[in-house]
Amino acid sequence: MRHFFKSRKEMLFLLIVLTGHLLVISSQLQTNTSTPLLRAWTMEFILPFLKTTMTSTRLLSNVWNNYIQIRFDKKQFENLKKQQAIYQQTLINYEEQLRKINRIDLLAQIQTNLKNSSVKASVIGGDRHSGYRSRVLDKGSNSGIKKNSAVVNVDGIVGRILHVSHNSSVVQLISDLDSGVGVLLEKSRAQGVLKGVGEQTAYIDYVSINEKTVPGERVLTSGLDQIYPKGFLVGIVLSAKKESGTLQKIEVSLSSQMQKLEEVLILTKESTG
Image 1 (tube, rainbow, N blue to C red):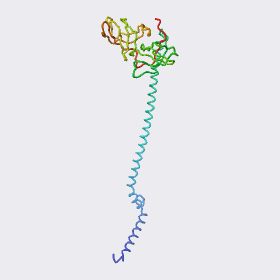
Image 2 (image 1 turned 120 degrees about the horizontal axis):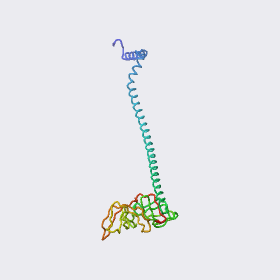
Image 3 (image 1 turned 180 degrees about the vertical axis):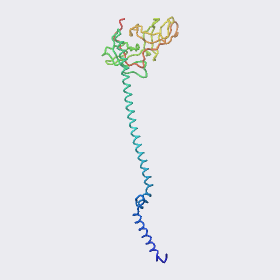
Image 4 (image 1 turned 90 degrees about the vertical axis):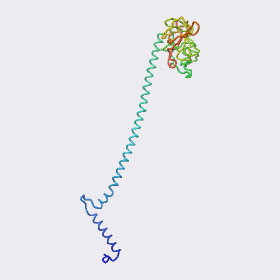
């Protein structure tokens, strides 16, 4: 070989020529699939990278599509929640209106059966910290309201008008510490004075210990205080105990829920009966 090639340069030149010739021939040769050999080699080399790239692209595409779908589903869910809240509030409003209509209807029936002239009024204010003392009503002297007018609702007596302005008035509740109502027991007809203690319960004083008091007995207005007409429901007897000497103290559960007053009737004329 050394004699055949006179120098390394000749050998290197020959190798370059042979390699180039081989490349030219390989580009013209056809594989079994009619693909040039060089192209087939190139495809075999690139194919794994293409697979990896396509897999990554599909993965990213799926992640993005899932993200978009989650955002869409979340928005739809939030919209449904808002619609549900609106529908629920609308339903509550309708139910509240129906309850109010029922209360007003009952007041109208009482107003029709009363021997007293009366004015419908709504509670528009009151001290939360003294919820058993007073309430502000939306009717005043312009509607014929006067001081000491009795106030009732569908459950019984509520209180008496204490202060009056042109368009509003303040009612002192019978549960107030300074209130007093002439009452009688329905069965025994024993009479006394109901006094508030700032709660939903009150007490009757000045009833003889000889009077039989039965738990569950109804307490009615006696009419002797010249404020509340006779025969209105005040409450129900809970218990009785000896107070001092010959008197007993009777605990009464008030029939009107003082913390839930909404619509009332203000009596503008005393009963004739």
